[in-house]
Image (cartoon, rainbow, N blue to C red; front, side, top):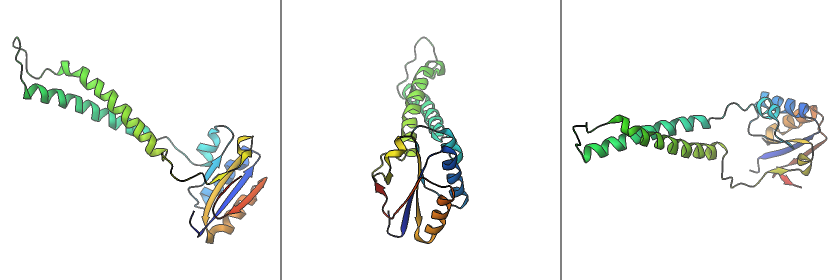
Length: 176
């Protein structure tokens, strides 16, 4: 964290108040806050944090199309560079190249999916976890917001409006 930012961690007992607090923070223009839950909650992810469909599928499509084009280009180039005329067959025989193109489609698509997953998950994460509270693994929900010092009172008021069980302030984050 930079010194000009203030961190807030709010611990909530109910999912609904957590989702509503996230919506209120987003409505006021705050981005990049983290939500913690004891188990995967789709309401928290989709409604509260405003997450949409994953863009990893675009990486898969681009990788697959690149692989198919590479497979056909590689086999065509090989046949033209070293022509083997056998029994009057054409030098470029596309049906024979479909197997190689298919395999390259699968290979490039899988590699692009893994790369897209790492990019969109922001992995590897070299920065340590900013905030952790053991109750977030024991049935409670949490939100950590890092806001500029000028907006600190606004963030505090938003979070207090949803009556958290606990509200912490720390400029550097915390680890219980």
